[in-house]
Image (cartoon, rainbow, N blue to C red):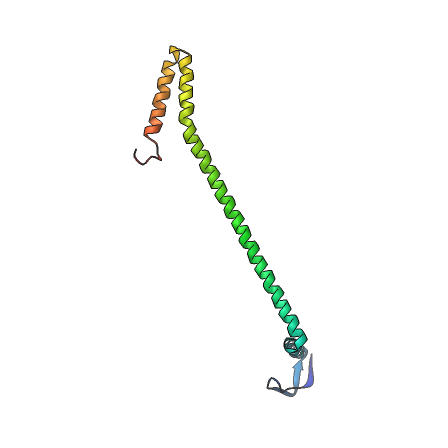
Length: 137
């Protein structure tokens, strides 16, 4: 819908003489003036300062919250890796003890377990000599 309007704005250096203006153009021009007035008037300038101050606070709080979550996730990741390392280390240190205990238990059963004990010694010796994680083998 076009209508004839006379619009004069000397503050911004714009001059619209009589001509066809669409309602959206008028609304846009009016909105620009209201926003400019809101930005420049003293009571609204204080409100705008408070708004930006609150917005900065919210952004700061959000970034601190994100950093805290990242620290928690990193801590859980490190704890999981340490737990896995401790379990593997316990297995490595306890396996020879368990094999030695099993060998002693087989000795108590008598000479009929001699073949089983020899097999146990050979398997364990093979595992120690050809350890894939040992750089010297």
